[in-house]
Image (cartoon, rainbow, N blue to C red; front, side):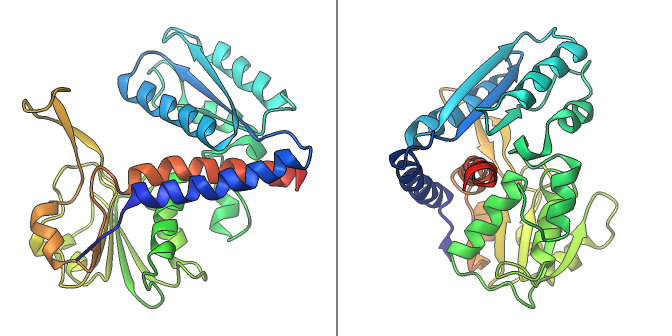
Length: 292
């Protein structure tokens, strides 16, 4: 069993981007600029956004953090999005999810200009991804394919089972794995809550991408010997032994499943860091479209 180190791989990607940014600035051009809009005081969102801002500082990006109270109206948030859409020196921005329940997340996502949508959630970018055209790809699936590529994992002709069909992870991951690329050409089965005989389907998988949000869902008897397992799950579970009072647990029963795998991602330290790296890669795509 080989552990897929997402943290080390993400660090490598950041170093590569930092070198490119140095060359850009040395040539007289401005550095890429990312903005993040944070609504409310959700602890997980604050931690994640702060990490993104820290990443920007580390690699030489400009960054702007825009904080808004949880009681902001939908129209007021749309006005913020419109202002960022018009800002010429801003290459891309995110509105951190989840948003308060009184705000329609889909409306906000659709209001972000496609060429500044570094989360890759806008319908135009999603459509371009599905067609195999250059675009910003949702950061988590992008991170998954980067791990597969950099670890030299064979995907062509393999059976890939994706568990979970969210627009953020499962659905785009299934599309990417089936495309005619060096990290695709797999035969893909997209499974979900209505899928019957899931255990039998998973047992036929050469690659499992688990993105269902249920801690420990993938058991030892669902995985064949030598399979590659990518665990996207990051659920907080109570743990009295931790100072925080919780720990992160993936969708895979790691201790039981890992001895059977050829490759497996840990939680934490697997896909999570690659999601942050994917956002930085998307900002470079947006920047290059404008200047390079």
